[in-house]
Amino acid sequence: MRYTHDAAGNVTDIAWPDGFHVATTYDSYRRPVQLLENGATSLAKYSYDTLNRRTQVELGNGTRTELAYDAQGGLATLNHRFTSSTEDWLSSFTRNQLGEIRQAGVTNSRYAWTPAAASTAYTANALNQYTAAAGKGVTHDANGNLTGDGVWTYAYDLDNRLRTASGAGTNATLAYDPEGRLVRTTVNGVDTTLLYDGQNLAAEYDGAGTLTRRYVFGPGVDAPLVQYEGAGTNARNWVYANQQGSVVALANGNGVTTGGQGYGPFGETSGTLASRFGYTGQQNLAPLGLYYYKARMYSPTLGRFLQTDPVGYSDDLNWYAYVGNNPVNFSDPTGLAGCSSSNLAQTVEKWWNASVAGFKSEGVTEAASRVLDGLPVEAAAVGAIGAIKGIGTAANEARAVSGPVFKTTKEATAAAEALGFKRISETVNGQAIYQDGKRFITRDVDGHNGGAWKMADSVQNLGSKNTRLGTFDASLTNLIGK
Figure 1 (tube, rainbow, N blue to C red):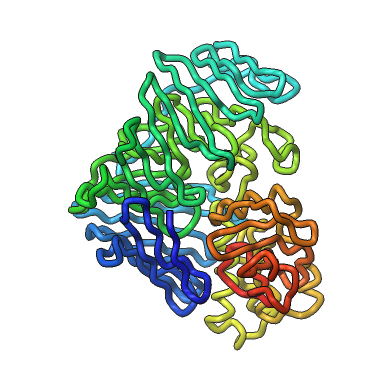
Figure 2: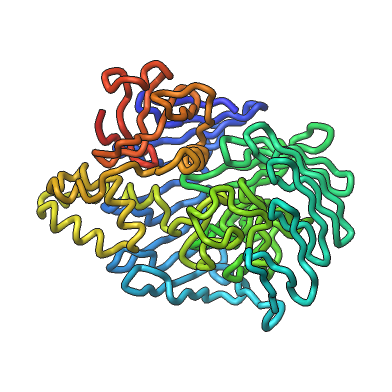
């Protein structure tokens, strides 16, 4: 993959090995406003309100996505409008005072989820490992990895990554690159090689090296936008997701749906969808009945991960649980830690752009209070870290949220990888360095001004504020200071 950046460090073009490329244009606030196939054909146009919330996406096939928000700032409606209104995906949400979803509804029955069973019985031991599920025995190895569930048998490498899976007439072998990314699957003798753009899957190749499918991602985390069949550009399908990021529909170049799917809260599905991506936008290893969550494998049947949490107890006392068993309000893009469904980047950007839009004129403290009231508690805390200093709050308020955004190198590494950066061997002041093309970042361990990352154009220039490009927020969207 080849990348082109503008003077501000924005990625303006991504090119695949065969010459196909996608250009991105930005507005004056450095928000992506349009994606162009081969620099010419529009794939998507994005519109925002004055609080930097996305309000509409116009897709290149004539369809559109509409978003509206409640008085608290939470997502109130999310609608996908297709060529035929009978195919429209329309959803609405009500929330409690903390901004958590307490009710979600989809009006079109074609996207409804139908439970396979009224209930399923599970038995767990003192380590929170299932010992039985749906009447079948469940086993684990000495490292805590799930090795059998009565249907499937699993084996792992020394890094606790899934290497083989056998069951239900399927035999699969998986391989990973040095960065831990899944790069090859062999299912019943059929090889598939995976090419990445950072953490985003960019293409699939068959055993002969022929390009079989290409993927273009939109802005955000785990946000597939278009999938192409083969090496050409004619067989396109646009991808549509729900509020969790789970893919609910595909539509062709005429805006006609080619598949639809409904989800249970833990990723159980109803319907048919010919997509590599599914629950929360993760790779669906359909023959295995698993999702690849980067650091771990997830089973929607069990509603949990197969492996223990690599970061230990820092995220949850239950090392197998998915987002504290609250998947309606949280997601886990990396398999390492749950985060609010509104996600870190959107929260920080909301703070910054609210100030730019005119909150300064109303008084900083009042504005800060108003935005905080509209966010879930944990999201408000992160948003404060990212931008409260930038809008000039009183010193005591700034001190209340000072400190590093990423407490550990593991947290920083997971966040950097989600942004498309790779860890390199060099360090600065004892801290890990991550590289994305021409940019180098390291975590801001002081966080006195609400910064998350320090950035420079070389490893050497990271060492001094006089040579750095600056200190940035967690999403690398906003410059906070030197």
